[in-house]
Length: 99
Image (cartoon, rainbow, N blue to C red):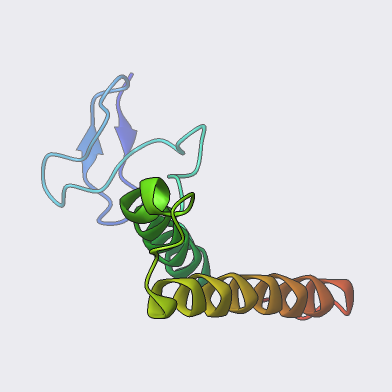
């Protein structure tokens, strides 16, 4: 028993997955496609990776006290940025604003 395409009105086979004329799907997908991570989440991952890389590079120098000051300050600043960002996102979500 043929059915008709909802987009172009062409008769198509009952078990057809797409319309042969217009290419429109003839079914509703069961699951929505996965959403890509939010831009803020990607930024936090990059900052976290920078912190871990800097810490790993200079880990052996911590005991001897020869870690450059810029490394210490960079890790502290990046950690504070991550904490501030997370606090801001949680407050926005608490108020019903999408973040």
